[in-house]
Image (cartoon, rainbow, N blue to C red; front, side, top):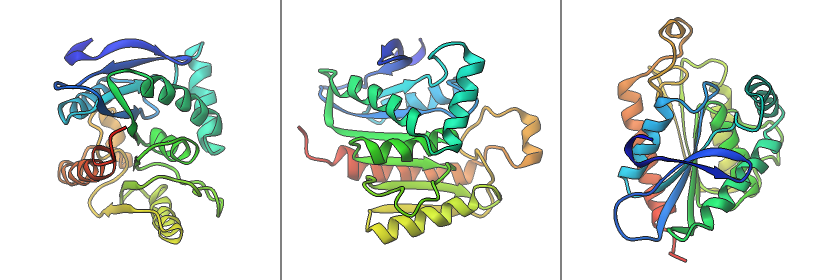
Length: 234
């Protein structure tokens, strides 16, 4: 696999795993893919985290069996709140935390679109030091985010379907007193941090936005520097 990413089995799913340069144990990040699956764009994002000094694990959420059925069941679970997938992610977290090269007390999780919603669901149910939610769904229940770790989130103002989720996330995290950084980008739509969406989707507001993406990445990395890398080593 390119750029130091190797195929592994993490719990019940296939995944990509890579270590940064330097001396272990390393802080680590789980990267959750969009509905498009574990594509070249997600691999590039993973390499970006490795270059920043994180061990990285990228689970393929569609690798439990027959892929079309996996896709359908995963998307249905997302709409229902993500409980089943969050437990699956918990297995990958355990695998990652148990690696001798990884500091299990300094773990972050980041997701895009579908993966953003799952990052929230997993951040509530499992021990992470920070979660990054990028244009992901936010559950409607008043108590759905209780127990969540610190959150950094980015949304596009032109993403009419998910813009209300940005407002909901800001309000819930503020009410819970959870450290957070939620930002909406006026010129951006959905998937503005991802480069690999089919070109024809741009007419529906799904396209890369360089300026917004650059700022979102700067905020994300700064937040993880504080809450993940900066957490006490175990």
